Image (cartoon, rainbow over all chains, first blue to last red; front, side, top):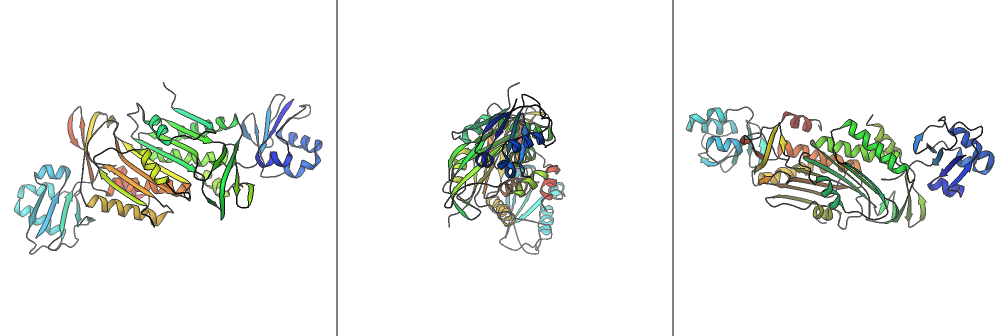
Length: 82
Length: 82
Length: 153
Length: 153
């Protein structure tokens, strides 16, 4: 299983903060996105947003970053703290 | 009359913090220095020190800066505050 | 060796005076202390602000701040670093973030503090929702913040 | 309009907390506050320091600081500025100088604060006499301080 979490404006748009997906056939962040869109086609515009950032196990990563069972994958808009 | 003041290491070396000189024939900071050395030849090494800074009426100035009667002329080593 | 890095993500307010006292306590080798404090402004992009809501990604936030501080430590001679960031509901004038850095050299303290703030702005997972006269709105990231962070490279 | 510049040359100690409070009081437009505090270090150029004596040129000091602050105000958007410099006898660990700057923009607050410190170091008429294990000695100016000030031009 892969844990997927969403934050801020993305969390509100998807009306979801956390979900789990099967890790079979998923080996990159990009494949996690494709899996989410397959499950929820109306998420496409929000997930396929070039500005969206990704993190795997609390480290910011690019879309081709590897993902394996047990990982926590996060998607969120550009950060605005400070 | 021109008021002349000295600070810090220079004040200690000259054993003088303040004196007054006649303003006749004095029109620049450099001429104030020459006048002081004429009066006190043993001040020469301390006054003719390239690192020495000068101020006229509380403004840092170069040696060719004009000086007139009533001015306050200050000589001091490079500053070391902060 | 004592721990010289303090990171806190908290809902409660903080006291700059206490944080400065901790940075200076039993620290007679660092002559320079630079602090930054960011607060909620009353205006942003022409709108009257009533307050902010700050969300973060628990777990990642601390790791991200810790990494930024380590990068600063590798670039400059700095000894103690404190980073405090508040989350939750904040009103106009309230403190949002504090960064304090000590060093034997003032330029190192200034540069490291600004570096930490610049990278916090683009890499630490915090998000602001603004409450203004026109309602609630998630703030957009600013390209100028990306540009500032890139200048350090 | 209230006076937004505070300059003080004093023998007494000061409270950074009070100074920050004054900079922030009724100031909801400036989101950024940067402070610098310089203190007496226990070591300098390899010697064990017991303390410092600070001399200044009364009258010129305030004018010189005021001019430096005006230059900073002409370069960056800063609103409130506080500069406090102590004179007289100071022990290791004691506060020497405080600079506080507020701005709507954090980079302006950082840059103006460091600019003020850099020019204070080369233009404000203060002199330090150091008391170390080897006796009393007037400190020499450092060429690195001249270099730092020149970088702003």
